[in-house]
Amino acid sequence: MSDNLKPRDATDVEEAIRWALAGGKTLEVVGRGSKRAIGRAAQWDATLDLSALTGVTLYEPEELVLSAKAGTPLDEVEALAAASGQGLAFEPMDYGPLLAGAADAGTIGGTLAGNLSGPRRIKAGAARDHFLGFSAVSGRGETFKSGGRVVKNVTGYDLCKLLAGSWGTLAAMTDVTVKTLPRAESEETVLVMDLDDGAAGKVMAAVMGSFADVSAAAHLPAAAAARITETASAHRGVTAFRLEGVAPSIAHRKSVLERLVAPFGALDTLGAAASRAFWRAVRDVAPFAAKRDPHSTATGSASLSPGEQRCVWRISTAPSRGAEIGRALVERAGAEIMYDWAGGLVWAAVSVSDDAHAPLVRASVAAAGGHATLVRAPAALRAKVDVFEPEPAVLAALTARVREGFDPRGVLNPGRMWAGV
Image 1 (cartoon, rainbow, N blue to C red):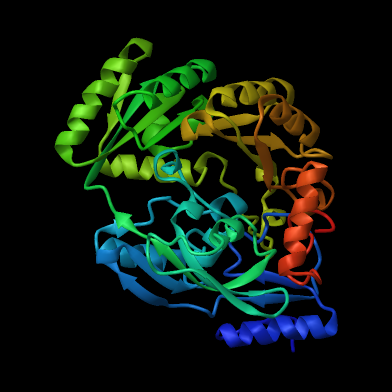
Image 2: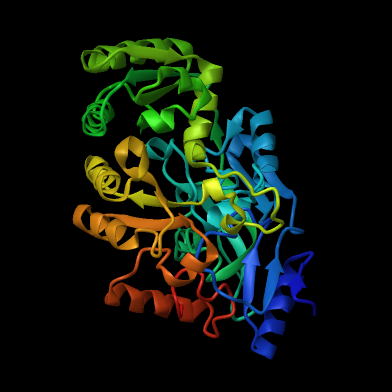
């Protein structure tokens, strides 16, 4: 076999993994490669390319269920659901632009393997909450299935939750089933202008506890807001709240929201089209997007142009502690910050250094609680800095036992998440 294995079906995936087992080889598991630069810069003997496993195998809009082969482009899945007035409620992020790659290049399998979600997570949950079932091949070269094609499925162990966020280190998924939901008829976004990070956090907390029933809440300091077309003219920080649903409901909840936030600053409103564009930009962290070096043919963050060589951290914490982490990184590392999930998701762009400011990031997260992932950095940095949150000894031992159960020989993406795992 060549160094690039491109199976055509699930049987081919089995054969490829058994070939690796027989030869003592390791495999990098990828779909279309849009998130290839996330994780440690480890070395593998061959690439298991699942991009040929494409096609929607079942879609029953009336049952809110869709099944597709794991390599099916995500935009194809979303377009099919949209034609029936439905969508993926977890609003998966597109990592392509952030990693100096093409937009809309992700797959449904990669989306679930990374447990991706966007601004609507505060209301709808993450990808794992909409992941109903799958077929996959373990590192033992054995095909197994979990879940099914119904929304209410409680039989056996919920392996969907385990594989979501495992980044291809436990099994190579070949077919997946997800829940779809009706799309909102319309939306509007209310903007509160010129709040500092601390005040924005308090306002977002108040809104989340109100009857406004927002589906997204984010705060963009002035530098980040200036890089989003819909707010670029403001020249100041923007705190945004999205309202979705039918027009009468939006109107009522908007009045509730505006009465609550009006004392804190001037207000503005984005209509439906501008609102969708704004939240897509927040979802994909557009203010920190990378521009490719036109003289490079490489993929991932190593190909960034010199002016875009900033490392990007993704930090998940309690919404009430987001501003605390952001303030520490701004004051001590000169970071640029933006906040999603009502302050619970902090994106930080920092200058490239010998350690990507990892000690400061880890210490700030440890003090506030949560976890941090180094999403974008040159390969040399990702080879020596912990990319995913280091695990305590007890949890690391449990992770190793789970990994051994699925992939005892360490065939699939070894070292991508943690060294030696």
